[in-house]
Amino acid sequence: MKEWLEKRWGISGWWQITAIFIVFGLTGSSSVYVGKFLMNLIGLTPDTNPWLRIPIRIVMVFFVYQILLLWIAFLLGQFKWFWAFEKRMWERILGRKPKITPVEETQ
Image (cartoon, rainbow, N blue to C red; front, side, top):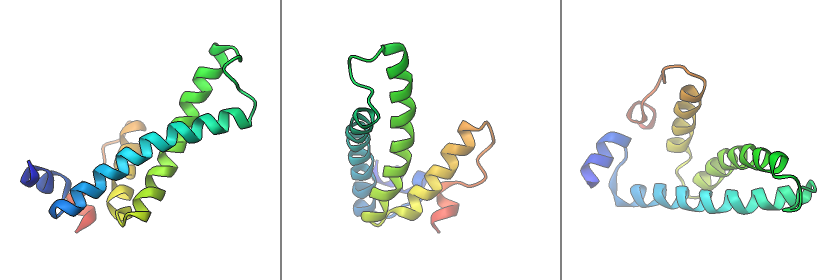
């Protein structure tokens, strides 16, 4: 498994694999928490109409996740890998073929 991840993601060693998984875990948990805080800050509480609140929450958490992903990756020394990951993800979202692969970006 380690060798497959190293080849597919263009990474080296257990530390980098572990750091990437930690970044994903911390970002997921943190984005939900920060999203809840921001929802309360703008006045959208659980009493707000769910047809308004839920789509706003989904969009908010999505963008908060993108920001936190890069910030937490920077703190754990994985910014370069996650920057390439973000670029590929946005290319896919926008319907374009990704220009880079993880191996090309990290070497």
